[in-house]
Image 1 (cartoon, chains in turn green, yellow):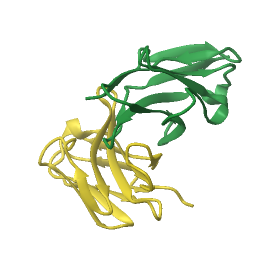
Image 2: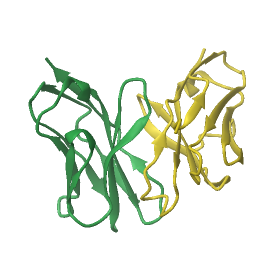
Image 3: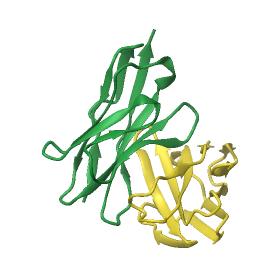
Image 4: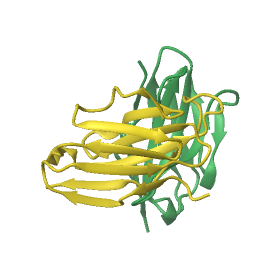
Length: 112
Length: 117
């Protein structure tokens, strides 16, 4: 069965600095990978997803993620963060026709 | 499009009372999901429906929880009787279902914050 691990529960970053949010998964077969974002007091919304093809996936708001099969990782990156990026970020995985499994989330704190 | 609509946004009740949470999915979406979010356990899938039929309810914590989808535009999640440990934010989400449930984007509602005293 698949699972997903987000290694950092909180990540503080200065405004305009780059950020990487880490995500590792475990699965025995081909997987589909997602990053969702949850702004304060809102539901989750999709940032990006990897289904197949290019391992570098670009999403909304300047975020991108790279699928690395050998390291079973799908880290999320942004070259320069803004105060509006303050949110909780969830990595998620599915395989086959199975339901989605979410990680525990990483809170991104943007420091002025 | 109004997005996924949930009501109420906040619910405070006393232990032992019945609680009903409501969800209206995005029109045309075939899948509907109910999630629970807590600090301790994160985001958990409780149950999901396809074309109004429950497909997987393995995440429903116990018999006190039940969910229905009487038509394509409405679903309820009921807790009876409620307990303090049920306090959480409950999210409803829907997806298109054009391809597969595993690859489609899910659209989340704003959630219902439930507090059981």
